[in-house]
Image (cartoon, rainbow, N blue to C red; front, top):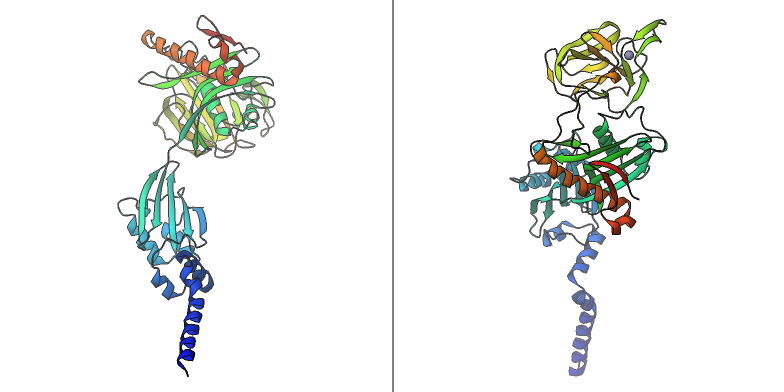
Length: 438
Ligand SMILES: [Zn+2]
């Protein structure tokens, strides 16, 4: 071999070497990683070489769920996460969160590599509270608690009743929670089983909470009106410093001694009447109360504060609760499925005392509600229930100011065209709100 041939051979070999190696040398490191991992399914050696890199290029599987009855450990292992990894995750949460305090309602979201290696865990214990674990470069988990801030918006809306209040509100994109909050406020004055009529309007000024633009829950109802054909009811939320509640436009609390009905939702199936044909005994019999049909297990609320006089089985009433109130009043709740109070229990107005059932002489699940004065049954609807005392003078100025502001906010929302004539949107006659100038 001549000197020239030898040199040429070396040059060719160098060139070949360079050609082979060139693409490897110029490729970005991450691309190499991605290729080798996706091709080989990550051999052990590879994992040893890159022990803890967050696998940002690896397709991750995201799994979300509710914890339910099973421990967090079981849930994670069921997705293929190695028990040792779950243990190191649990350990990394030390001092931040103890998974033994997990509750069935808690939600989680996990990110797994194709090799079932846990990359991230988000553990939600509430609407605004979650715990996060992220795998770091050194292979360990970085864990922290994260508070999620809620965004509050005040909204005013008007709904016109076509078939029902429920339909009017939910048909316009709000939920049954708003309906429930609204009917709660006026439950002292309006019998929502009977009163709502086609064409009646409700107006509500209320708070809505959002997380990243998504509606999550309602806040307080700040002002509400029920505009019927014959009557208008108004309610304003006011905190007098000691107690917060709803007041009418004159600063008189809406709360009364007796609630109108013992169940929130349901239908009146039978009224108070001196003579009624009984479907079971097939006889004409006095009906000394009002029946409200509601699904089995619906909470029964005691309509006024008092002391439980009887809780047990009594003939046709089935499981019965009798509550004694001041001034010779008693209320009875019959056909219950479960009793939640005992004789002698002191109960507060609105407290759940039993669940709707069909015990005793009952054709279907309902609560038989009866009121008695000095032992004599009276029509619950005829009870003149007293209101609390109006706001004292020194608080009235603050109340009036709040009322004006809320009414104006409501008007601005509902009738934006009247914004220019602010102040004229509400016509006030003395303290009474007469009408809106729409
Ligand atoms: Zn009855």
